[in-house]
Length: 414
Image (cartoon, rainbow, N blue to C red; front, side, top):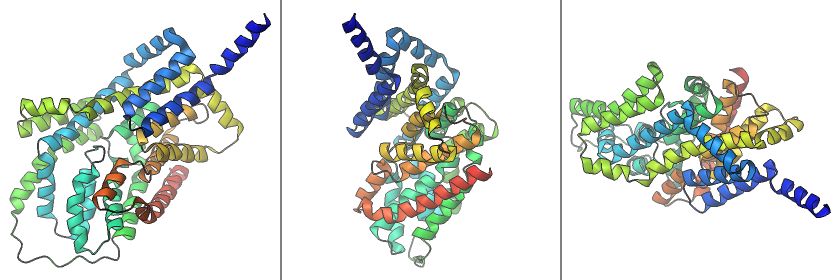
């Protein structure tokens, strides 16, 4: 009997929800840092936590509930079509038309190096800053910028617009996990985005002077450039309009965006097959589902309640929890989606996710990710410009701090 009692206590300790949660997150971090995809890493963590805390039957129940959930299905299909649209932009050459037409319209080097990364940023491909880096490089040379400042400008302006861009997996995931409207999240990021643009200009471009236009350059055709710009931008315009103006489900809106690309470019079957074979399509889609599964498992296992009670006993203000926890996770993981996926269940029992709280959690995770050494856009851009990431931090960190202050002010007053 005594041995049985000891065994019982050992089992209780081993399968304590908080311990299981910790072990699962450690597995997730190990997989992530070993370059395993976000989707696979999240799925492995969710299943490990579920099997250890809920058992096989409980895991089956949570999995079935997650698969049937309308919010989950909308998120998964939206994520699938968003990444599909992003890759099709590249595979069909439509992104080249977009950058070329913008270059025909814009002559000021300061505007080019700030606008072009932002426009390319509307296509949220992992490491996609490389798409804008070549043109930024050429125009930044005209402004006399060094490699570390080129890195900062390409990274900062690529990401500055994302917090108010409704067609990105990160904001859709945050809205789904916190049960907050996308429009409510966007409204609370307007001040932050304005500050991000202003601080990006102040730190990166304020003291530079563009060279005079080269009179030997071939003249452009404004009408042809405008037509090309409108055609190449049309899938994004339609998707955003359907989502923001007509309030159509994001999954449907992004599907229409994909269909628009296929119609405009008359995409060949071979290109579609190549796109569907791209592992990024399925990795992003799996990550969307796994994030919802992880949240549901954390709640069902009781880990969320235990963590929430522990945090509540610290009497720490909500503003601290909502800013520090997601920002730290974003920095450690180099992924805003992963940071939100973990932050929401961790804080669910402590914080009520009204729009103010969801908005601060959203932007905190994003800003933490911005300066993460594992942030792919930062790593690839630094490699392209042959610049040390540490040298770019002297611009990135002050800009991030100022932006975070704007986020905290927004939380307090809006």
